[in-house]
Length: 598
Image 1: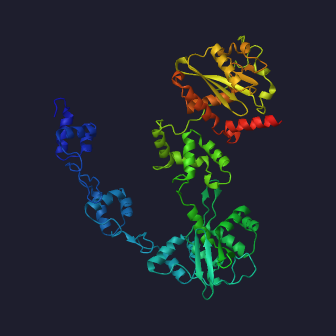
Image 2: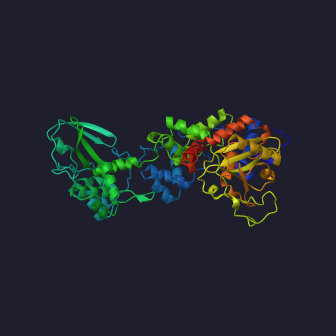
């Protein structure tokens, strides 16, 4: 013990060593429990499972408080030991059921299936309450035993069908009625006759079964009538479950569909009776029909709609969660990961896959599925794969996706007002040729500077309006007017005949542009003050450069010309949604080809 230890800490340590609980001592003395634990560790006293204030249950390995048991807990344990249910005793005494279970475990009394208050049905392995059966349940069992239908009795007595089934199982009575062979098959749409095969193949969703021919295979395989199948659906509530924008078909809806097929009604007539669209009925019949195939000719012998089978498979299809398409390694996953590592947005990935693999549906995926794989799934998801790859490439693993661009502020009140900058007069954007506005004709560019850290260096960007083709120029030393205009002249000379106009803001770096650049080669025009939306393509491209490659504060003096050339190629090889997932390279070639042929 050190001489600087607080007296309260010394008192707490002494009391805990005597057997009191840390949390109780901390509350009484008004200090944090961690202070007591640190003091215990300094003295070498046990603070874990072996501490005198820590008593663990050997079955659950959880802490058992050593404070005296409350009288209500003692009474609850006694009542449960006599056979009462834990939940009933807890409600009557006003305590939590977990308190009773812990007390039972401390005494070594059974709390599971072998407990006196726990009676399990051997068929369903579910708990059966030992409270006295209600008179309505007794009456219902008696009526069903005499031959009445479960669903009818449940409706008349106002109880749930499952209550009657559980009571029948407790008594060992049968819960299903054997179905006699049906003479007519209400699901048989084809009125023609078909030779009887020696073996019949039953194909349902996910299963294919071969049944040997016995005395009468056709009757054995035929579907039941609507009246016969109703008893099998009495356990399913007659409610339509709302899901998304629509409502799922209930079991009784499927019975009505089967009865309508038996009566020869059309899908429109069945839909009108159910209050559903006829396409819903048609899709349900197509999904829920069982095909009986003749193995000799591999032709469909019968197409039967069985409501019980259809309802079962619908429930299986609705189960969640399902295995996602990007959960396991595949060619699609490899391509998606590669695109995401190139900082493509999920929407760009979706459209590019549709463009690259138009006929291969296994290579298509929605952008929402990619987002879910990145942000919703747990360990082993797509996000971990990308983060590990980013670490191997010495990149920030936290920036899996680039953020979206910020919305622009409202239009400035001084936008469009007359200014006194001499280099702008006579070259306002209103004087620009009208063909530059509709993006149909190539050769019209937008430009600006991306300023580096401290305003010492810059990156010159030019973007072609129709194809979004981007040109970058490295300005590591300065961005004076002479430097910027000289760089523009070099870029125009590198692509002769491809420049018609350049639209810039009113920055002073373009003060000498109109004096140097020949207007017959390329016209230079300027936006209104504080009106960046008049150069939207260049503004969006500069934002993407900031988000993907050069964040704000980048010193372009430290960036090599080779890396900037790679960034230019990467921008021009990125699919754009506005171009229908084409890249600027592809769009530029397409635009130039059309312009050449016209």
